[in-house]
Length: 588
Picture 1: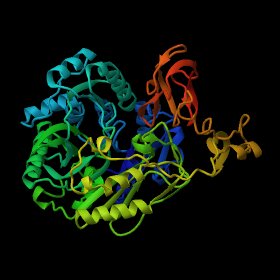
Picture 2 (picture 1 turned 90 degrees about the vertical axis):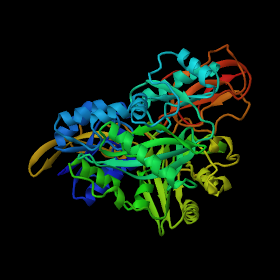
Picture 3 (picture 1 turned 90 degrees about the horizontal axis):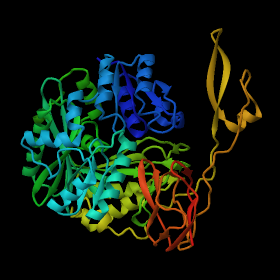
Picture 4 (picture 1 turned 180 degrees about the vertical axis):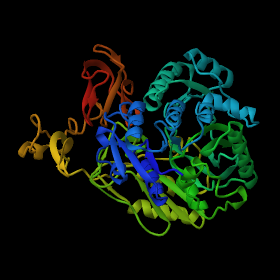
């Protein structure tokens, strides 16, 4: 049996796994970046180890650093969570090569299903049809244009090793294809460490239905239930629910059986999700996520099955604790992803920063899976998910009413969140009658005038600095690093400190509200990193034209000109960090 689990992740999913392990009597090991040294997951785990670095590539995607922590901590299992290395074959093999249990599917299954091109082939071989698309990685934009000409526009470029909508671009015409492919590959590389992409037909009004499966190492695979994830923006989910509304039972059973076929075709075990698009009474295989999904709690609430605990049991070699006939689904569950984004009339602008105060709602049927507490910082370098609010009701109307009550009760000060948009979604008659699709939020839902009313942070907080100090433990001298508030370090240097301490206040960027519309001073709306500058001094630009690309919270955002004219100044270069309100381009 597994005795100590290292969670190779951060945020709410790391917290979720830690809590499941604690209930099973299993010791936990957290890893953290420099920015996450005080994070909730690091505080909750039995042990926590520094990976170093700030960005994902420097920390949570640093295989050697994680392997070193496994060695030092004595962990005998690794749970990858979702994102980061959760669907990385090389990482899974590196873990198992050390004789450590990987709490996930076998590397061979990840290899087939983690790559969305080979997964399409595997599904077809299992008799499950997918959306028409390519079965090879794209090598040039010409292949995108040829596919669009043959199948009709729009088409979708997707990251082959991605998920969560990142590395996906909808292409409306051949003229848009070059920039879309470049942007998709760039975002995929930053988010998943690989930039391979493929292209498929883009359905015009589908629902996104996914099937939770789980299997053991004894050949048993079951489908646990489906989730409707159609309320999306930028191809990233906002609201998920189970069971899917207005969804025929015969389709549900057929989809579940198809999901089991796909899993068995690649020798799959542990938890996974087979995703489908459903339109006009037909469903199409989309992809398989070889990991735990963000939205797994809605399935847990309607079935009473702890999927994380079951993952650990399966990884330990135990058979599933239930059969297909044992699964009973009761009531209805809805999950709301609370993201650090300002709906801003439908633009959904990333909103990193300090959470001044967070008070989740309470009451019957309410569950909060969060990764942050009051005073914690939401960094621009990671995903913008603050946590997940999951509600259960005896039926869908009850669940919707309870969700709306809980959202209005939720208090988060200091950052903007998606809560106002979530309320608008649940209040809309299209959602109540299940007439929405994956394109509904962006094409139908009116979010004009909808914005987050986040209270400003009254205390910017203080940066901590590292001090090397000498300490004695049981008479033995150790030299250790400690992190202390900068002002305290400057005012009273610790005894034994080596070298001068430098104190400074944490900066929140240039401040300011940005330029007025049409002024020509183009300001960024959020903290982030400039990844591309699209204009040069002397260029003529039109109002609404993209002038640079800003990366924030693993997403690329185009910054556009607010007036037509000539570029007078370019104040940034690729790689520059900017703060909310910083002027990056000046147009006259």
